[in-house]
Structure formats: structure tokens, C-alpha cells
View 1 (tube, rainbow, N blue to C red):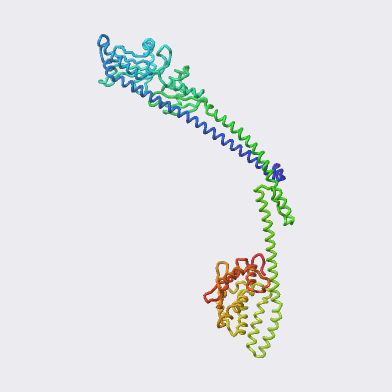
View 2: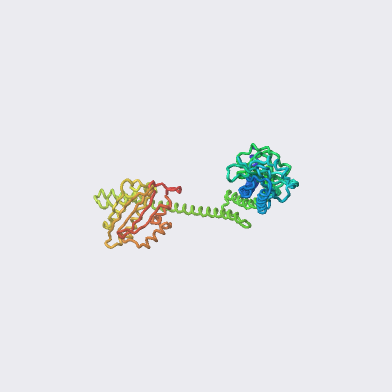
Length: 592
């Protein structure tokens, strides 16, 4: 409440500065939070996806490698020389040496094909005799010493499979870790009959691949684990042979989970009983995100500070022309309508504002002049109407006396003419009213035509098609008489034959009515009709109740959409159509 009270006393400049600064700071905080969270989320997911793709690639490669080892072992056990050697009962002598030489040559050929093969051994099941071929001697390979122990430490390569595999450093004196494949030699003639054992020892490429991947990320550990949770291959040799603590959390062939601050991804190597494990600290995923967050925070704060300073200067620049506009508006409120804003040294937007203000004041001046002009026109029309009423007062009273005198003397023609003239002037007066019912206006026209027909020997015929439902329509008095007079003097009298017809009709259209007066006079050309319609709204105060002033009175009373319109008709004469509001209500300018 206290802040709101203080703000109510601030000027516009201070309020704008405060709110813009507040909005900019809030916007910066929101943008910073959203961008930071979004960046951290996407970068973390990207790192996790990269780790999973890395693991997928290694698994795929190693699955292919193990399949090649197995295919190589299968090809060896069905070799004729191997089968003959294992089935033979010879354990010494020339026959045995020839059989052993055939196996040795086969093993030598295989070693020539596989450069990473350290040694290959074919052992006879019955005698324990074997044929050895390797890059090192049997003693250096420690085959006799390590064979039985390493075989017992090996595991089946697949569930229910008799082929076994081991990773370890049991062989060789230098202690290097190798992969050993133990494949039983089955008889090709008897199903499931084991005749011997094929032993293949490889320098496996997986260890080197894992070491290279770990070098890219110092906190990363990649290793091969058997199905019992024992680590069999890892660059950190101290962990070889140890068992992981999360084997019970590994479900299915692949997945990931977090344990003790580590993200652990795992995937089974094909159908083999081995898993590739990817361990990395969770914080490692957010390390780059933290750097990005700090950088974005520094940039956001710097940009916000710069924007606040810049917007203060801009507000000062904007407020100066605004102050000039407000000052001009204050002067106008004091009645100085000639006040205008000097647009010199204003920027484009402020100049538009000043131009709008100046244009508004010019429009106000023009509207005031227009109001003055219309007021003058209304006063002039009232004056003309008053002048027209002064003489009829005297004439009306005089004609009433003549009418009764003619009645007494029995002169009916004089009585009829005088009565029509008295009726004519009575409607002219209309007790000072300017708008009368259509019924009275029609009586006025009939009285006028009685006088004219008596003057000109019945040259005009009036045809009235107006039904009684329209008799109460309001119409400015003396509207039809000038039109009838024009039809007589400018159309019918100068026509050949000197006689004609005037037809009155009326129709409704929505909230308006259209009253038409059609004569059968000499008519007008289309050019004259167009000129009449274009000039009909021009006011001429020298004309008393002329056609233009009849139209002007209607416009002033009801609006510019109402008034007279001229047309040519089928009889060759002229039709005047008068548009009036059916309710007869005038605009706010007042009824004259």
C-alpha cells in the first residue's frame, strides 16, 4: 500500500522507468532460468545419448569379434586332421607323429591368418596328449601350469553351451591379459561325443578399445563383465576379478540407472554371457552445463544492466517531446484553441504525435466553422420563414373577410378562390410549426392547385396515390409547394397544349419513406438532371423557399442522407423524390 501511494505521486517518466526496469529484470530472470534449465537438460541428455551410442558401437563391434572367434573354433574342430588326431588311438610312434604333424600344420595355417592368435592347442580327450602351436614356447606360455586352473575359472559363452571363455593373465610370464576360448572337439560321426578340446588364446582388441575410450574422458570407466558380475577386462587392472555391487539392479539385456553418484549404462554383448559396462559420475554430465549456466548468467546480467541504462536514456529522450504535447494540451484546456506544437528537433514518432495533435486542432477549428456556418444557415432559414409569415397574417385575415362577403353576395367562384387562398395561407402559418403532418401538406397543395387552376383554366390535374396510413408522416412545411410550382411554371405551362398532370406517390423502405412528385411537363436533359443533383445541396440564402433551400432545410433537420433527388420519367417530364425519416425525428441540431 505504501509503495502504491508513492507511485501515485510519481510522474509518467518515473512510472515508465520503474515498470520497464522491473519488467526487464523479471524477463531476464525468467529467460535465464528457462534457458539454463533447457541447456542443462539438453546437454545432459545429449551426453547420455552419446554414452549409450558409444556403448552400442562397442557392443556391436565386440559381438562381431566373438562371433569370428567362435566361427574360427568351429571351423577348426571339424577339420579332418583335428578329427583324425582326436579319434585316433595312437599316442606314440610314427602314426601318432604324422597325425600330430597334420594338426600342427592346420594350427600354423590358422595362426598365419589370425595375427592376434597367441597360441592354439588341440588336446586328445582320452590320453591328455596335445599339439601346441604358438608365438611363444609352451613354457613361456605357461600352458601346462595354467590350463586346468584357467579352464575352471572360465564360464560358458552362452546359456547351456559347452563352449567356454575366460579373460585373465594366467597364461604368459609377462602377466598380460588375454582371451582364451575352450571349444570341445565333437565327433563328426557320433552326436555329442567329445573327443578332445580346442584351446585358442588371443590378444583381444577389446581391452585396447576400452582404454582408448577411457582416455577421452578421465572420469569414465568402460569394462567387460561376465554374467556373474565379475570384471574380466578393464584398463584399471586392480579391478579385474572383482565383483560389481549392482548386479541385482541389472534387468534385461540393456539399461541404465544411478547408484552412489554414478550413472551406469550396461548392455549385453549379443547372446554371449558378457556385459559391457559404462560408469561415469553424474556430475560429469552437468560439468559443461554449469559452465554454460555461469556464462549465460554473466551475459544476461551484463545485457540487463546495459538495457536498463539504455532505456533510461531513451525514456528521457522520449519524454521531452511528450512533455511538449502535454503542455500544449494544457493550454488547449484553458481555451487557447490556436495552440500548435512546434515539431522542430522531434524524432519521427514524436513528430507523428505532434502532427496528429495539430491535425486534430485544425479539424476542431474546421468543425467549429462548420457549426457556425450551419447555425447561420438555420438562423437565415428561420428568418426567411418568419418574413414569409408576416405578410400571410394580414392577407389571411383580409381573405377571410372577402370570403364571407362573397358568400353574402352569392358569388361562389370568388368565394371558392378566396377560401382556397385563405386555407393556403393558414397552412403557411401552421401556428409557427416548421414540421407538419403530410395530411396538412397535401391540403396545402390542393388549395394551391385550386388557385392555379382558376388562374390558368384548369391546366393541372393532380393524381394522389398516397394512402391514409402515411398521412401522419412528418414533413417540413412548404416542401411540396415549391416543387409543384416548378413543375407548373417550368414544365407544364411551357409545354405544347399547356396542360399536364402531377402524380404524388409514396413508398416505405426500412425506416425511411420516399415521397415522389412526377410531372408530365417538358422535362430536362440528363445533363441538366445530373447538374441539378450535384448542386442541390448548395445553400443560397438569397433564395427564400427555392428548391435548394427546401433540400437544405431537410438536410439540416434530418441529416445529409435525406433530401431531394431528380430523375427523368417515362412521361418525358421530371420526377422529384424526397427521402424522409418515417418517424420524422430530426438530428441533434434541432427541428427548425
